[in-house]
Length: 128
Image (cartoon, rainbow, N blue to C red; front, top):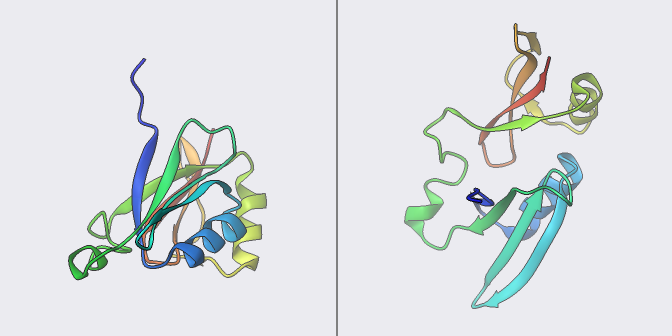
């Protein structure tokens, strides 16, 4: 079976990224291994048994740093499916998450765009 298992997400700092994704988004920290030379293998996922994870990759030079928070050229980059939209929305709102719009009801889902700590745009979705 072929699968996509990780997606690299450029970050400015490992520890602040871990804190955001685990404390604000409630993700599980799956791995945090020292690779030497200031490099770490850090994976987070919405839940511990997820088959997919974000690999938090610290920008290592000015070229990469230019893309932290803008890996998609300003478009929504990640689509985050939740089980209870309104509970999650209110929880994140109380924690200061930057939502770019009011939640909206579409034919297919309840959805809202938010911006993570670096500026990446995410859709939070509860499918109907």
